[in-house]
Amino acid sequence: MSGGALAAAASTTSTGEALQFWVLGTVAVIGALCTILMRKAVHSALCLAGTMIVLAVFYLANGAYFLGVVQIVVYTGAIMMLFLFVVMLVGVTAADSLKETLKGQRWLAALCGLGFGILLCAGIGNASIKTWNGLGQANSGGNVEGLASLIFTKYVFAFEITGALLITAAVGAMVLTHRERTERARTQREQSEARVRTGRNVPPLPAPGVYARHNAVDIPGLLPDGTPSDLTVNATLRGRGQIRDVSSEALAELAALEQRSQRWLGRKSETGKPSGGAGESGTSENGENGENGANAGSAPNPRGVAK
Amino acid sequence: MNPVNYLYLAALLFTIGAAGVVIRRNAIVLFMCVELMLNACNLAFVTFSRLHGNLDGQIIAFFTMVVAAAEVVVGLAIIVTVFRSRHSASVDDASLMKL
Image (cartoon, rainbow over all chains, first blue to last red; front, side, top):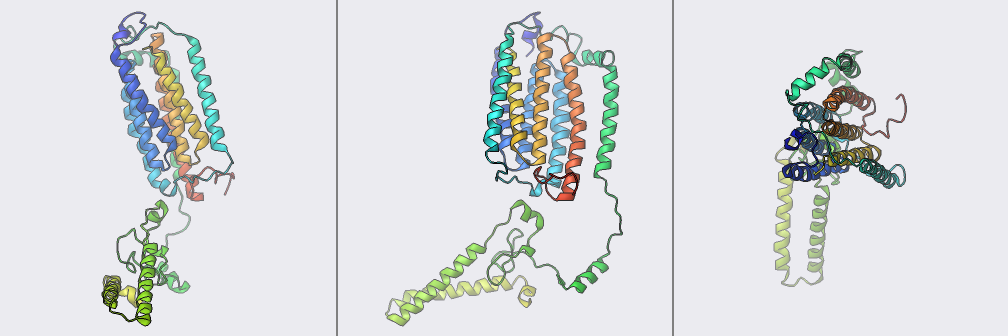
């Protein structure tokens, strides 16, 4: 790792570090690309956490042992968890829409990014650094000790200001997110009275799936005409788009059933030939299915039927 | 391998982060892209520290981390507040200074 760093002016790193750079560098770039390309904020956060861990390894490889550990503890440990926390709090409905508000903005942005990257890389390539001083001498008394002596002598003023900044940030976050309750919370009795007065949702909300064939929480109940009812599923699941919609399935089944019975009826009225046996068995099966469906629909929740 | 390659990687990560800020519209993802840019700068600082053979670059990277932590706290608080009033985390919807 720091084998090259021990020489006063080295010109190449160890092969192990080169291998590590190319492998983990690829991982870092892929993670960064996934961060900006994933649609859901949670996936972006996880990809970014992976990139940050790779960067921590690079810090260690560059002789910044303290920063490598701090990167893992502060960035992937604290900051990314804070991100995930806010994603859970806010981003439930926050899957980006793919619709462009400005026409051609994405391509222009990608083009600008490409130009910017070329500019940066050209600047670096222009520098033509052949040899460098490793950190062997600076780290000889220990990396943490060296950093500490610098922080508390040369950079002590910046360090103090950093403390003030942290306190301000903590207070600011509390002030921003604190919400003063200006009115008394309504009691359960008042809420029920208000419901009765307005006449909306007087009984409890309908449970999910009871009108369909399933009663899982992510399957909306179906109204008599076969359309799913939004009242039956949790708003969070609805917002995440994690609802398994069986309505089209149910409608298709209903249509197929009707078609079959029509065909059977039509065939029966047309010919009445013995092949009706197959049709008969088919319809009896269908009838059974329908009955079963009705039973399954009504059995778990008699209230649903009463309604 | 020359440690300058770390600088190229940092430039690449910074570019990706900048492009993400321009492309994405979810405020949280935007914020993550800013963090990515800050991390790329940190990598550049650490590499400079190695190239120059002193620890000042690492000190700067350390201060960047502290400032980034403070920034994330305040920024996420702002996002939560905006979400509370607008029920959206998209930066397109927050086009007015007040509700």
